[in-house]
Image (cartoon, rainbow, N blue to C red; front, side):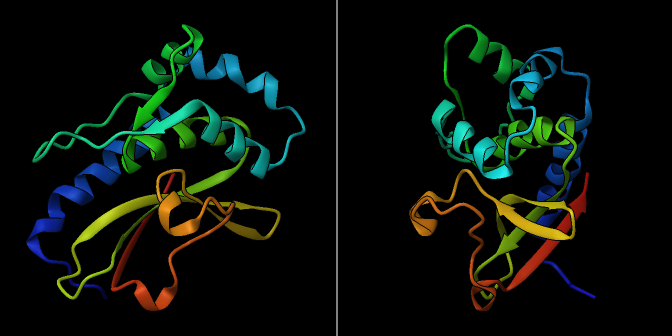
Length: 160
């Protein structure tokens, strides 16, 4: 059993909100799906890297952008943007529609076990792959990268 500090209660609520956003009706996301017939998970990851940009939330505000609105912006020629939770929502919305099983992963890297990063793990055909669009400084842009286990002080996962 994992005991988390009270500061993580809002993070846990965010994980449930992310799952709801990934699963909600999203016609603009559905319109993108046919373009990915037969492509690999890495191809999807590389495409998302090209059409997104990392953008922090304002200080002391947790904002989650709705995937449907993000994909509508993409159709207007704009790049999708956001921090790690926004990237989870927009990637998860596409991946589940492409038939991949995803889980949301929140991790802490400090002694206080404050959950401060979220990404996806994708499961298919007996393999599990990290899917992180936001942590490119650490990963150096490597597909499938996850933080080393020895750096993780706490982890919570939520299946979508």
